Length: 513
Image 1: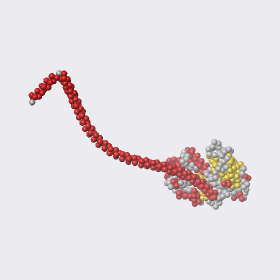
Image 2 (image 1 turned 180 degrees about the vertical axis):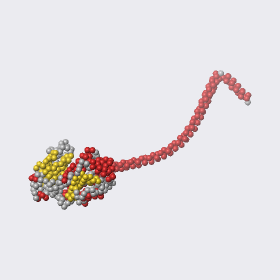
Image 3 (image 1 turned 90 degrees about the vertical axis):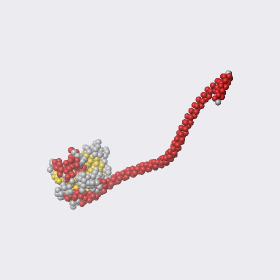
Image 4 (image 1 turned 120 degrees about the vertical axis):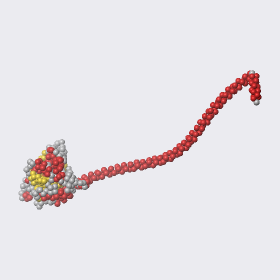
């Protein structure tokens, strides 16, 4: 693991620490933004009302010190470790201006470099999601239970994405192991922690908060955390959603009923000067930015002005005379005509002087209600998505079925057309065979008629010759007849020469005999 992260540190350390803001000022800003979102809203509960300057924090997997600098600005001692020596070398340069920061090289399996029961808070973010060993992550949580003092807290992030395609995939030092909600609870309990809040179960950014069990630890006060379930009786006006997520949208006027945190010294004194009200707000982009006004039992506590998108905090002392009952009504209102683009991350009353936060219900009860509701909401959303997907698949299957029926009908028509064409081809074959026979017969007849024509040509030629001879003979006969006619006329006119001639010929004939 160390070699892999040393190589990434040498290649592009800022990118691999936080891919959303790889370089320059954006990288430093991202650390502050994450701190304001993930750590700051929880501090009054995580530290049980103690000022951060009086507390020690251990950061597991500090990388370049992106968020370590934010801890150093608020906590008394910051002890941070990382498995990569290259990352730590760069972190030392970045954090050289802080005298309250100590850096350690981790083994990748434990927190042996940190002392036992020394820290008020252990923290880790986008670190365990890169560990490919479930045993190593379990051991880190056990080690967190060792280094956190009784009553201290562990606030950390796991990869909660448990989709089958991810769980069955190959794990490495970038895409590490993931855990279900129940697996995370089991690991925390095995390490001596009592979980009291969780946000993002079922996602990559599954953030849990847990308290190190001790004999003197008190249940949580009426301090509402991100992701925690709010009993319906507490939401009096303005809150827009029954099941909270990381932020709860609100209206123009919002009223909530909170229990007051009792303190041991309250039994001996009526001094409640340590009570403080804390609220964490998130403002989204808007055309105009409002100012939040906070009242407790109709008494003005203060305002939280906003001048742009981002996270805002308000912390106000609660006058003792304003609290005459175990419960109070807090009113949060805005100088706007319509609901602002603002949501609440956390709010509540705690006793800073006493250092403990009590609650009318046990933290275990609150935790399970919160996360079971979150799980139900998440599962309901997944079921809705699955139902929508099933509906899409059913519609797709029906369209396929219709298409198949159309194509079957088309295939049948093709089959019928093929049968018709086969029958036509067979009849055509018979016609061709008959035509072949007829052609052979015609050929024979043609040869016979050709021979007849040739013989007829000879006959015609002979007839022409006979006709020519007959014409010649006719001409000769006509000439002879003409001669005879001439002679006859001459004999008729003068018969004596004719008679004499006849007598001469007769005499010659006789003489020849």
